[in-house]
Image 1: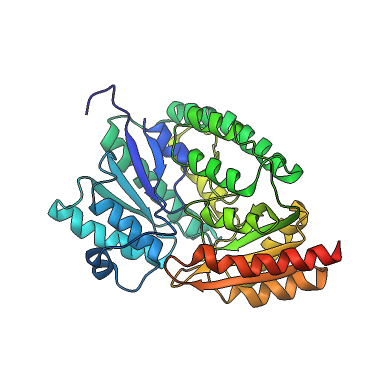
Image 2 (image 1 turned 90 degrees about the horizontal axis):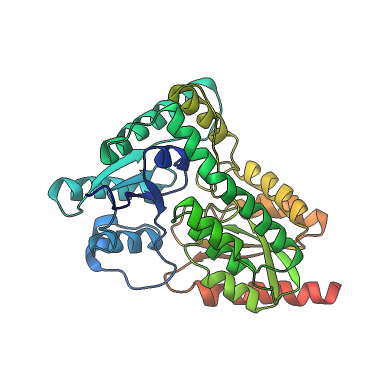
Length: 351
């Protein structure tokens, strides 16, 4: 690869500190899969019974649609992603995918031993990416990487404010987050700054459950008269963007990033229902939402059993909770229409 060619590191999952990849001279590119689309028999056989989005992601990799990547980092943040890593490791050893594959195992639970473990994982990640780029992750490089994300963070804060005042729809915001997770920070900031699309819906809602790889489901929800003002999944408001730290040495930076990782919002696949429900309550209050729509794919780690705890926390506060759970392949857009309609009708009567 020539020096003029950009180095792109693929990322599956939500636990990679972008600062480390940027410091190594590469762009982190989040891979999402898709809500809809055919899956090959080969990919289904390799992964078995697993979230269909992960199967579509494997299809993309096998079909060569990601061959511009220099390497791939897979996060152990869900059962589907861990299974995908083991399959890809074997495929890489056979030459069936043209790049190295690295597992990042970063549990979110607190405690000094876990933080030390995560810090070591980040050091290994830095070494892996540096081998692909030929650039050392030192304190100066980490500082420059943090500075590159600064404007992006400011633009995301402004976009969140636009969501609140109705000048940016939830679908437009989700598309902007996707850009932020796949482009260099400078380009991503421009895209986020341009996310200005007046919301057509009137009822503010928060979406919980599965990560959304594209905005098609958001568009279907907002078509029913709702306005998505926030979400707790990691392709939206819970995405880990701009977690830059300043430190005198790389090791201290890795330690600080491990601390920041523990403080992130609880993830569906790796947190208790009580933690998730309380975090959702805080998000709903901050966003001024009048309802919550839980959307979870079949076989996804976004647990359907969170719903009981969410109802127990939110309904006494007058927040309506509706759900579309265990959604099958290619059923998402149709599955969310009815619960979204119930919210619109109920909140319209209240108004």
